[in-house]
Image (cartoon, rainbow, N blue to C red; front, side, top):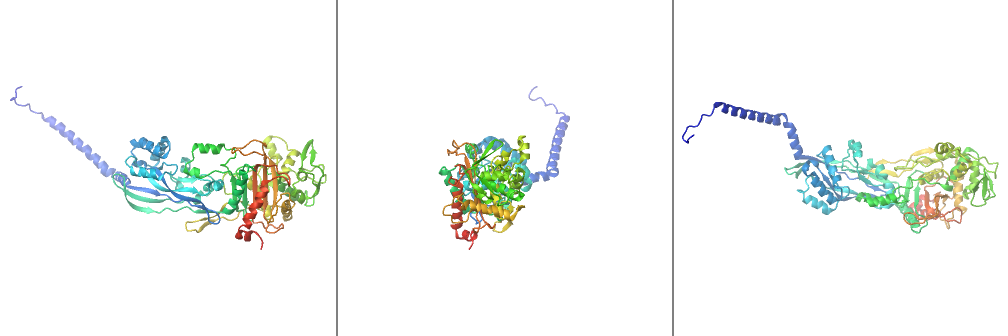
Length: 635
């Protein structure tokens, strides 16, 4: 075809087809625009608004913990935390940002990525806390200044828990830690968020409901680059309540110094000491040594540190005052004596002539630490004659006139005094102990009870096992005239202005179904333990009453995890301080000291370090402070 040849005519149907296509496209676009703007307009308007407006939680300070005089034991110090708001982090950059954050804050990248993705699935508009321990100011500044490298990352000022004297109080106060997913699911209705720290052990766990504050909220406006423009509304947070303990920090230090000195001098490897007010059940001091530094858990404990604590055979993570059980030795003779007196098988004038250092029953010999001669109940208790208490419990060939009270009665009255069940103290992890009887042995070992079992039970050996707190609480009930209280560490909870919002009242567990005269007899015997020199207290300045106890436990050889010598015996001294040199139930303080792997201590001349420790602490505490002296001694 030549250049000047006319062009062929374009057929009209092509224009029609193009017109139809254009019309369809316009129609589709129109429908889509109508759908977006009219049908789904409110939805997208809400999304745009959510992108422009953000509601952020305002953290509340956790309440502090103080002793009965107001000395701060736990406080909050400033720190920095790293969080990620998933909606502000492009999904394509999750892995990259997670890796960068993990390197800076010392976490596994997979854990950081998991925290982000899980929060994106839950609620992408709320932050996921990434740091498990406070970060340094330098890292906080780096992350804040390089926001383009770390989209969605927030740096928040936070309160960090500080335990002022970590190991001294860690067995009772415990520590806080990040909330777990299971805990969050259970507590979300209570206002908990994924960034929360909650009480994990001790009083931090027990009084979480008071210590935890209430979140506030801040609604902010952001620009297109997600930077905060202004605060539109704000609801302030409410700090947690301040927990006031019954603990007396001065007495806590006196006991801890004595126990630590004994460990350092290799007199014993571990120790427990508790002091309480027998008239109310208030715990005045509670020391378990060795302990651990609970600040390690706040700053982020390493696996090496945790392994060392778990492998330590002294169990520093356990509050041995309530969490482990031990044979009480001769301190349990109080139970045997009260059982015989209450059941009517003996009186204070029941005499047993201990004319030999051993007796033989059914071909088995049972020993005493010396020949005592004739003893009544008060003297038998004061001199801790094993044969006297064998006789009270099960009878003996040496005194056919004495009917043994029997194991069922010993168990009955032992349980009345609180043995074999938790005391109910406001601490987690309390052990129940063992208060055996024939039915218990049959069920546990499928064996019948023997007379040997009765004799061993009578002197606190065999199957009997107690916590130090159970033993102290039982003695406190005798010291106060027959009321068994629930021990407690909480005195009150105050608000931020110092007003009490909850005050703990003494709680009676039970009244002892025992004669006041019988209880007086035991108090008389406890005082004679000291005045007879069975528990020697040279130049004693106070009227201390108490009972010694020694229990064989393990081998008298080897060393523990700290390299201390294991001497094979545990020594007790459980005591109370009458306000006069008499047997009235007026004692305002009772105390138990329990030393591990110390010397045998079965006689007046043998070393029981718990006796001397108790004397020094009583005298320093009562006489070393005029206010305490005025409160605990008569005018």
